[in-house]
Length: 75
Image (cartoon, rainbow, N blue to C red; front, side, top):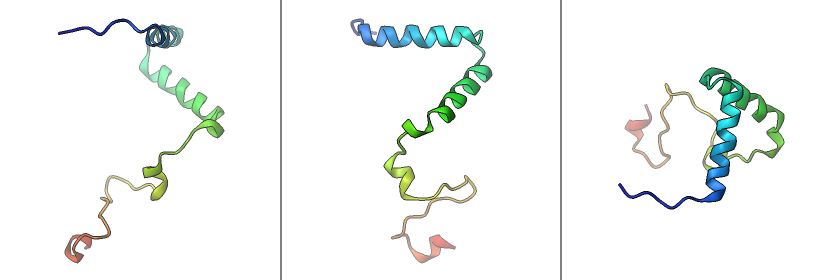
């Protein structure tokens, strides 16, 4: 497998992410909770994807059916 040359920016991002993870003893549950809290604190900075903004959120129990689907598929 061919390895890509090192990118200093990517290396720095990985180092920062590793240090943040270490603050939580690399515990995924605590790390995700931290990131969720950061997301809440900076909600005004987040940009909603165009695809998600087009329609209201739907649960897995309600599949998305395209508008041009045959009538039988909409039942």
